[in-house]
Amino acid sequence: MTFSHVLAHSAAYGAAVGSVLPLVAAVILRPHWSKGVKQGIVVVLAVIAGFSTVAASGAFTDATSLAELVAQGGLTGFAVIAACEAAYSALWHRFGIAQALEVATSPAPKAVDCGGQCATRAAGGLCLEPCGQEVARE
Image (cartoon, rainbow, N blue to C red):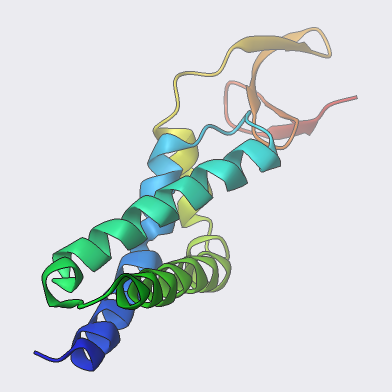
């Protein structure tokens, strides 16, 4: 297989990997972490996913120079990050799947005082009554 074929294939594989990466990230992330921390973790996951995709596509054995490896890694990394952002915005975030998975895989939230009633703190600064009704915090 020529390098141009490997390059095209790894970019396509990177896009496929990037489209499911938000779900993997949602399992790792916690609702109470800051936006910056979450973004940093997703970038690290995207770099790892991109590198793994390049390795799995055979670029290390097919590339004849360091420049080809850099081109391969750059294109695949871009495909992973672009697909990750597009899939998160268009699908996983829009339908609440990523947030639900993030909350479901996080440790149990701590009890806080919301207007004298025992409730649990959820993402977004809301208090949840034991029956599940949302009450805005003051």
